[in-house]
Length: 379
Ligand SMILES: [Zn+2]
Image (cartoon, rainbow, N blue to C red; front, side, top):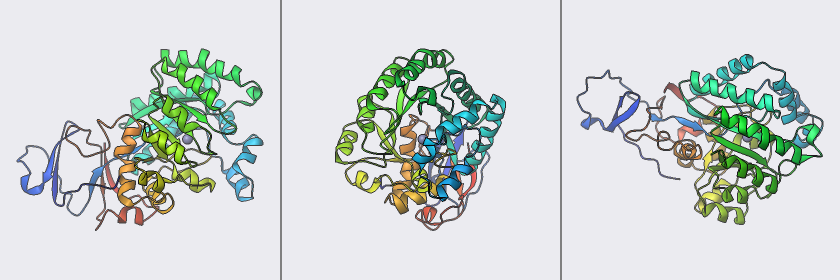
């Protein structure tokens, strides 16, 4: 977590969009290619945002004000706010408008250095609306230059008509949503919000088992609201990642240590909801790797600037600047299953790069908080 290699006065050769060589400037080969002088700047791997809900209908600024007036996220959800509010608005919005809005958000994220992105469904919660969201994500994959992975999150919340009949909604996910999503190849991964008041461990287990039958690997929301067994069920299913983890004890850490599951912290939602931060320091000290992501969404983390996520991780998750860098690049690529092509400056990987302004030291990157340090983003 705490090692970042760098070369002062370096060259980097890109051919056909792939990093083909790099090293000290003194060893720079003669090249027929166009060259550019990056003197004084840093060239680093592009960020990977491994957890977002970038497709949504509208902001939830009214709920923001309700929270400022003293209501909790849970109280707002109980009054029809939260995820169900987003689902109602998304259901009423056409595919084209959803696409255009998400496209705009993605361009702004790219301008901040995001060069690979995960986007979840989960604001549909009906067969038609979940498919609509996933089709929007598919179109974003086709039209944006960056790498995008789609995650099916039909199990984000129980629609109010299924409040007292959880099994009927889970049947809908399993019998109607999953086969159609698989037939149209709309998802790369499957997610469940496994937490108090959302999906139980048993329900999560059932959904992940069915998803695996379609080749969908798990990336789940776990342990945001308590020690609710999300980590254990994620590890049981060899999930690619388990995300949130505001509540993690020694038991959860031991489960993760004996797994291939990447823990992912989302400092933006801890900041915005004023809830505890994932105990990253403790987890890293016990030997775990960690990724961090924006959790960009209209309810709990309306931001996509990963430089800010980095600053929050240092100030509130107890991470060191180098650890934050690895958490946003190579570990985030691992949490998205794209570490062979993204996340580091390595021969043969995609030349998705950030060129920053001049810094004396990498520590300055999270230090100057809330700014976008990317002068240029190459994809
Ligand atoms: Zn999320």
